[in-house]
Length: 287
Image 1 (spheres, rainbow, N blue to C red):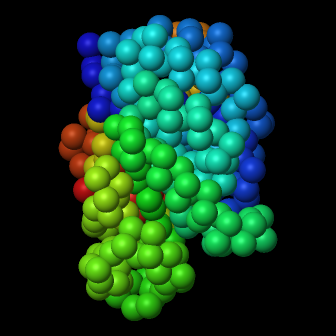
Image 2: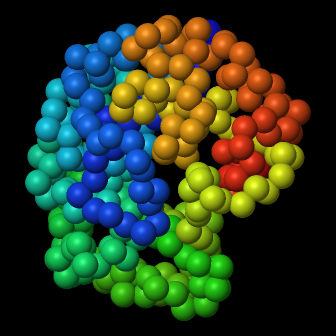
Image 3: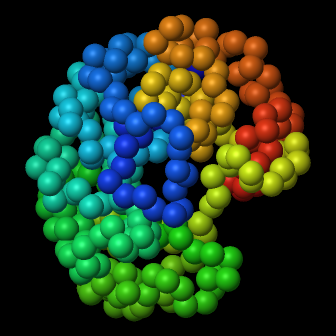
């Protein structure tokens, strides 16, 4: 039985923001129903210990999030959530009391879409309040500033105000700009981490073809399931460009062992990219 490091399970592709760095999908917007989520957990049981409840969308929007997290605990899955952070104050009590929740990734770079936010100070106050309460738990918190453009690397960038606020909140002895290296995380406090990195381009549509040489971790250490049950090779297939099957209609094993998935996986092992989406992906250039 193939066991993945994690499986991405998109519980919703709806979001309360419309950030320029995120892929604007043409897929129908929906929430995964708890009964469908339960059925999927039964099909992927044994294939991973860790779930990331995200591909596109804001998972904290889900009206049945409490039931979803309870189902994860019932089946023994550990959960990672990626959020833009705007709903943390409203969801704080649920998140901090969920035994299934292992890590929360907070995309601080979502604040770059300022017209959809309250003032930055209010946005950060909600996040800092959550972190303050989370220090009494075992929850891991990863703060992300993944919005640097190539011209921003190694020069003062768009994140100076946020970095200054982090320095004040965590009582840091030296400026973060002096210690933060793009692509490498640092520890701000026990179980609280910060990373700053370049903005990546979602590999869809008109993205340039970068050639057929390369490899990826998709279908090797992770796989993704979209809100409608479509299984795709990786967490960056936000449009479902490479549908491998639908988990509501087939077993997980049948999907993973079907010809298309097998061809993709074998190609990765030979550093050959068989899918147009993979040829357009800049993230795979890191491997």
